[in-house]
Length: 286
DNA sequence: GGGGCATGCTAAG
DNA sequence: TTAGCCTGCCCCT
Image (tube, rainbow, N blue to C red; front, side, top):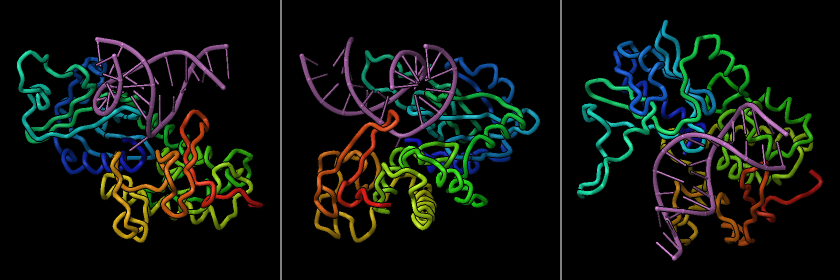
């Protein structure tokens, strides 16, 4: 689930439910018990996102820093918190589901949020939070950020543009789906070295990321297919293997390109699966 | 019940 | 470049 749009959405979701509220904090799993105790009973003042990092501010007590990694999830509920029984199967004979995987639970009388499987869940200081910001590149979802700093690094780099887009020091918040999709939408060969990328193409990529990721926050889903290429518009069946919205190439290896019917290709790039259309994203003098 | 896989990242080598 | 980590889900037996 988690690319940058997910985290920004989660920051919004926390603000809606908890901002200005006194919250109870606990760690049913136990691994964040000490940290939870330090913010328990305090007011959640801020909820911020930068790239894939989420920060929950508790004033003088500091910030809870959360990174979901590949598997982490944050789920919200409205029932009064009396253990995580929401998903308990009705059938007898099944053990209660893994309440003990909840690393952090925040709760008011009305709402609760359960965090499972994060890579990072730690109580940090203002200075430590600033250090996280300092090692992240500009984020297309932060209004004050722009692509200039990223361009300076990309335009000097021999690394492929596909790898650069996933480097959080260069651009913060882009993940494997947006990477593949934005390169397709701009017709750019993923193996093009950063320093061979045209300035205009970078500007277009950045603008596209801003627009796509904003839509991602709004719908809590990654949609990258232009209206004229949607299934209904083209008379193609909607995506079935659905992890989200409609996409052009992500996880479509060996299937025909929506635009030119060429077989979508896949390859390993820096331990992640890359997808692209060799015809729509040609290698050329660029 | 087990294996593989996933929208991520880091430390070690 | 690789192993390791965190969890859930889907497929297979």
